[in-house]
Length: 313
Image (cartoon, rainbow, N blue to C red; front, side):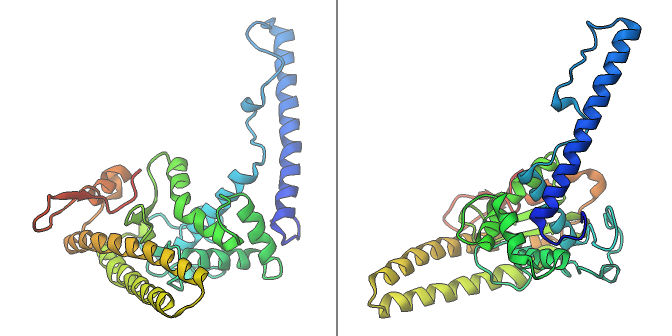
């Protein structure tokens, strides 16, 4: 942190001022160097005195980009790639040890669900809020979450809703772009209805992981959705308030679509889980990614379908 502030907006503002000053100094120095070259070697036609900002080697602070980088770092800490106890990458293969992390303990099973409803204690939004609290304290938590939400997509009424929607819709896309289509966090994704999503860290992958995703997360999500459908039916049958009934019908229709999507995805997960697929990181991300894509699923009386276990990259 810059200074003693625990307010992320103030920290960002201080960082921005420092970067702006560094940027100006470096640009002026580079212009001066060009002027000296021009004077001593008479190469005005080859080297311009003026330098465009994009060619200065220090980047300026960018609200949206920097907040997304912070979110990405937080996810890295959730998986143990990074740690609040040490600088740099602390785990990228080998034997993983949770005991090496103290300030913020990574996810134990290497599976972090991303759902539109908080069905799990280790839901990614809950973990992220806890991370922000540990980094900056509880007193400024809501201010900091507001500042973070302000840089993300604006879908949602509260800071947590906005952050949740970012994780559901945009985080993986940004991650894939940052890592040039070789993501280190993989998103298991049931499809466009957002019935089920979760992230895993490939450096902590093991052949039993897909089975755990299915039994410990997908099946529990399915049960929770079924319970929510039952609650919607109770509201529809017993409420006398039209707005409540309309809201319950709308939610029920969404949940039914999610349930259908999850059931189809469950078939693929079961098929792949039974294979206990090994991956070799020396083969590269894309080669390993292919092992979980275009999985053929056949139903009696239906044509064989090819379905992706992971979000397309």
